[in-house]
Image (tube, helix red, strand yellow):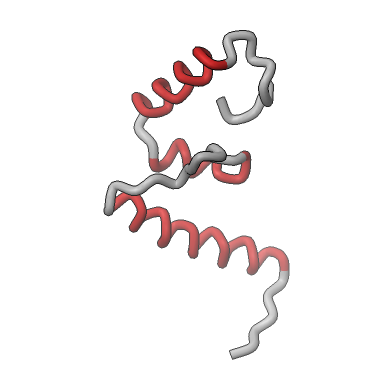
Length: 77
């Protein structure tokens, strides 16, 4: 089926697909981040699929390797 979506419909479709995929990732104890990090586009998903403790742990690790916050300042962590 060849369907054209406008920008609003594309965003809604993408959000719905991501929600389905990420819910299965969480169900099977997977991770939505990888070796390259979470990415700015996944910031809200990080809060949704990672516990506050996990996010705190990630921030502590970043602080160990980047105590002056010079690598990607103002980004995810």
